[in-house]
Image (spheres, protein in one colour):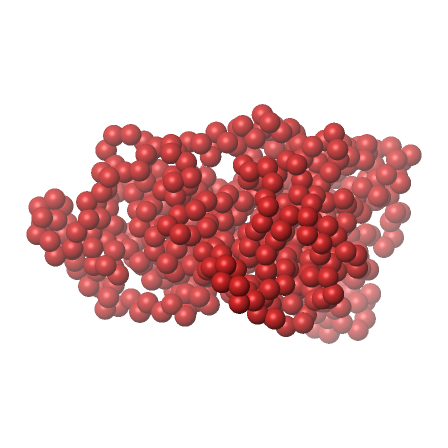
Length: 532
Ligand code: GDP
């Protein structure tokens, strides 16, 4: 039922919804802030960080976040720029990232991979990249901190290909002397843009000089040798590099690459403008009843994140839903597939992710925070009344750290089980059971160790249960499939059952896993459980 309402089409074509993926300290907060600055959403850089601090002041919903000064859960920043409506999904950037970071990528239509010019491709970038690659979404690369000495741009292109297995196409190229770059060369326009980064610390939009690469005044400005060198590098790129191919970009097979410095603002606007030109508007999403196009008149969305206890006085939760099709109108009634019940979509009073308190209407690509009376789970589908389709299951992300948890006070066993079961449904941790252990002891698996702290804090705060956490030495989980899974000989490793009673082996090392897999050619060891 395609909707021909021109307004809906227009709104969809305006939307750009993306996440920035990077390793901690690559400059994600700084770049986000500069995008807001150039987008006109803020007038003085520094306010995103200030906003973070302020958020702590107005809402103390999660002590851990305050204590550590980090963002435990992700939210979204929305602003308008040159006719576009931009949604930046904020992924937790701390070392202790969690499944939330991965799940947020499910809501994005493309990703910006931010790389520190000196450090190149780092561990967390690789993990996040893989999730994006699996989804086949476009990935844009921004090489940051060009105001400093770092790796050679050609070397970085090679590293990206070797480590991540994706070819890159530099959209622009740094101009000037290595470590003291003054601007970027725009390949599409064959133009040089030099930035005046003297004075100020990047709080304001920086002035720049733009002109054709052939303009002799650049030879003067840059020096003959630098100008010549730039021209020969461009020639080399044109001759030896890949051709630009938008179809490949859209399939996530070629990454458009940009250079700049988020701190001094150089290269930020060129990036934003090209990025918006190339990034896709919301695309159709797969459901069990076929694809649903964003301009389908029927409203649909899925839940990708649940945030608990924003207001400790009310014990309420907020479910963040990504709109996939149709128009959201506050208070509308939809069908919640997982409970099989109609639901009125109410928005929470305090929607901290955006500075606006309540949204009246929203469109595909937008994120809405919904009041959750405790019915939503991660990956849930919201569809129109009378339609019963569901979005594809969310992938399970393999946990990498494990611990045995049990209540300190065995009298609180009931609350413990209730709490831990609920938190598992919410997706805060993955729960396993050891077949020969009692019911009050569980093994939990997480992607990042911060999730253990969140578990402990929430069980204590919401269910009044103090727990012991005993860290276990395992580093990877493999779901075992095959005929006689009980026969598996795990020697020093551990066999557990997941919440669907499927057998899972927890291994101490990659070596130990390889060894076991070799001994059991009749069994399959899967990174994620097989569906069904
Ligand atoms: P995040 O952890 O990825 O959010 O990184 P931040 O944005 O907090 O930046 C980490 C550090 O790198 C901070 O000290 C920033 O000031 C610094 N930084 C960010 N961008 C640049 C840049 O372009 N050049 C330089 N020299 N430093 C930068």
